[in-house]
Image (cartoon, rainbow, N blue to C red):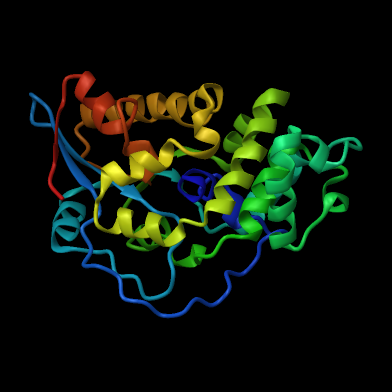
Length: 290
């Protein structure tokens, strides 16, 4: 789930520490059917929930007739970040939070058993302890995640949707998202860094993309049981708390008579604290239609 959650939190848009994804061999992808839900209310309210992926290899086709029909019926798109392509704003927000006074070596900021994975990640990223002497631990984790990504952010579903010209309401800002990371305690930041290092070692990019593309929610949920989201504190801060905020804003839009198409990272749609479950608890009928 590393790139589902962290990519949209700015890691893929950081000017000055953004790497280009290396070219990947062409491969065949399955026919698309990414998960899509229809939300209806007792007073005629309706909206749609679509779990996105924020970076894809070139050539991956994901739009379907069911998606096109739902998107056309909506009158508002609700996304995590409305100006996702503004690399300068993302970079400025990141720099405002990321830098600090001289810090211990990054490799010493995780437990001894996690250091081999972190050192392997730094090697893969072409970076070392020297690159993080004045960088907070959470920010170092995002920089490393970005440096080794192997899908292209420009191909992300969020960006494609934003280009369609529908009115947009953003749930968050770059500054607000980085402030959330900055509010993590030292132990949480350590767990984030270690979790990212171990997730990178698993190298499940193609498995993740295929699961998303085919709407295999069960497989996606299994992936959430790996890495940093195994930490209850991190899951609460980076996912569950945000899901509750998103659900409240979606409810407000529905009550105002809007027909929102909610397009947020696929991680926000999963398990009992995902948006489909949370809206169902608020009394809406939530039916998966793809």
